[in-house]
Image (cartoon, rainbow over the protein chains, first blue to last red):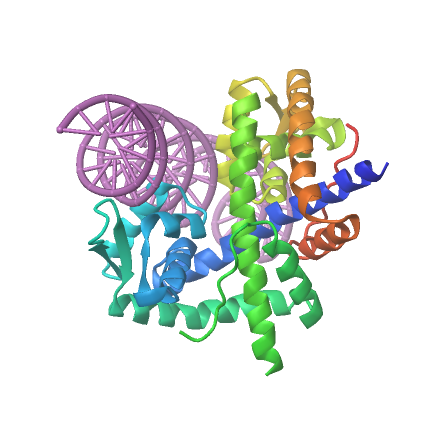
Length: 155
Length: 155
DNA sequence: AATGTATACTTGAGCTAGCAAGTACTATAT
DNA sequence: ATATAGTACTTGCTAGCTCAAGTATACATT
């Protein structure tokens, strides 16, 4: 019976994750597009770059960290490069590697988006959860993905 | 400072939701496609229909319950209809409404998919959480979406 | 009855992402 | 030195989704 209960609760959690994600992403993504002309994934990638050393990362690592396929990252970065937020850099020691580098313009763009985006996220979560609950939720969700969560501190 | 903490934790929770969702959906979706030739959304829609009265629902309600746009539901159902899992039914009292009805074949298909899908979900969550934690997680995630979570019981 | 508004649904265009296959480079083994 | 395997990245194709616009039906007001 224990495993039946586990299955039940597991499924509830799964459903909550599916629906909650869809609802929030829809809202936040629409907001970012309307206010800044970038998608959530664009933002997410820039956020990763901001806190990487020299604001640059290998495309593979970037893909893994935002859970995108290799081709997905290529095309997403195509867009960011076209707009000038990101540029390429090659690696002297390994010819296969191309870095994605956040440009100064990209940094400015990110900071501008961050202001409104963070406020929305805060609002959405503050409305529903207490401080303790948020801590719990963050910890629990953090376990779903192997990679450690990057911290959203001052950049 | 309290709001700063809230912002921090809120953002961590948000990141966890994003990454966790992406990782899980990717895995579970690939599994469903490989094993049964349906996507997670297909499954999700059939799961809603299964527990609806007469296994039928209005397309709008279906869209809302799986967090899809109106056009999204139309095209998703196009696919399910083409494969024979779902068929249309019209409403006698309101000409605007078209119901989506899960066929007997659709029910069988759903049950077959459910067997492997539920096992995967259970495994993924059981690996990472205790029974109590699952309950907490489910409750917390449930608050993100206004709609009540449908229960995954025997159909 | 006629008009205006809201709801249910569909369709066309465009975007994003994934898979599979291909290129280019590196590391390993013989 | 050469073959083999592995990694990093890109490109062609396709599926799925959204938005905007359009059709059809229902309801409300006058």
